[in-house]
Length: 605
Image 1 (cartoon, rainbow, N blue to C red):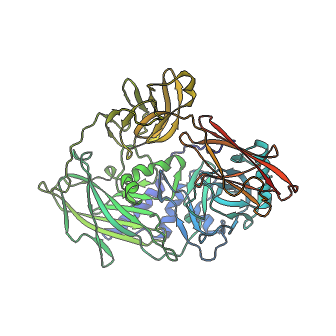
Image 2: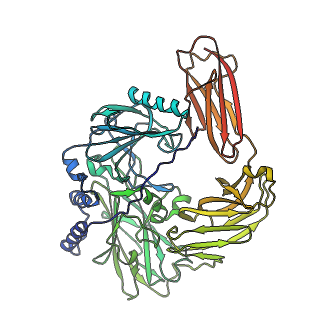
Image 3: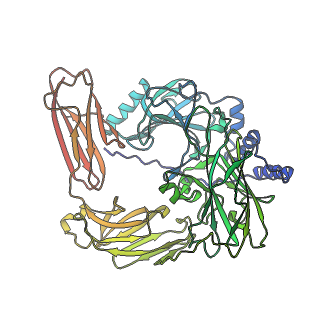
């Protein structure tokens, strides 16, 4: 039984229609020097251009027809996450409806259709349903506690057929038909959820994901977004040799400004990032912003809007925000108002010279930024900036590096015992990378540590890394793995090297995993009567390569047992039809390197 399911997706290039550009240009023309946020209605009209297929109705038309309906049985609806919000390693692709820290709220079908896919896993969306609608859209419901009786029965049939808890399968249009408003499941906390909530998405058949707010899922919100800091970056020769410069604006008469007046910088070309988040009525949650624009004088030089994402675009979060700050400072989102060379995300329009501000004329530049939420509430930031050769805000730092990887080209680095290859298009920006080798100190290690780059540097997609073990017996080759920063990458031994794939940089090392995973019974002991408890609970763990498979049996017959990766627990719900008397529950647990452990417990019913 394979625990982890991988979703196959198609990469679709986002394109902005001429109509959208014309509308924005017209808006800018009529606005003159008096900048104002695009109204919600205008924004929705522009958003219709994101629809690539002529067969799909526009979000505006579906909103007007109230095509999609309520999806959660909560009276006062609020969210704890919105579309496009920066998350660890991805943009969020839906709305997270709050369920008041409770499980068990009814989840409704958003519109007529059929259940086209059921995906159950201990990670990701957990228990998830996909409903395909006649108009071509697909709605997704994630982290569910349990499906309704009909859907749950179909799930169990598939799980027993494949003898696997984790399943991901398609259904025919006639198999599980649903009507708008039908209760399809109960809300839960399964998979990678950080707490009880309903994750809800709207996709098309090409796996493009759309902002559900476009379709009429509006929430009470008359509060403006909040701007925390502004960070400036030199874009000249100091670009890769300076940590930048942060300033905190103050709110005065409804507009964010710098009390210091003109920001003078020692770079003729500058870009900036805005630390911003949205707040809403009825909740204390901080969510993502919807639209961010930057003007240099009267010229719009940057515009980002979260209407639509394709799944391959999710990882561009690494380059859209200042990710090291996000990673190290409590997930603060500094949205870059410039586009780095390897950033191919489709959320940008009206980007002039990649968002760089040219200060070479020595004049004071009046910059204006709008941070807008979906309801049209706007936080405004006004600032002045000027090039000054005597300024010292951008402090150069001395850094030595071993090699440079250039964005837009294929890159490779190798030594006698280590190599890494990155295909063209796999870098967000140019990387200056240092390499060093240190001897092993870990008893499980079969090589020293090859440190290449650091934990704040990432690739867009999987790159090949190869390390030569220094002391590996032939009989243990199938137990060898490659790790990065202590986390297993798996890998395959071939011709004296272990090869794996990585999207992370940092410390690479080969290790041996000969230790079987562990199983601990939490609520059952030999001879205990479990009828009143109704469930058998176990905690499972592995020391290195990670749990790959598990199987559970009662009296020799395979049975479904649920797995939750975040708590490392197995939960088997007992069939109350089991006969009175003694039964044997057996767990067989296998890690990624095929080390196996078993546990048998005799219990009573």
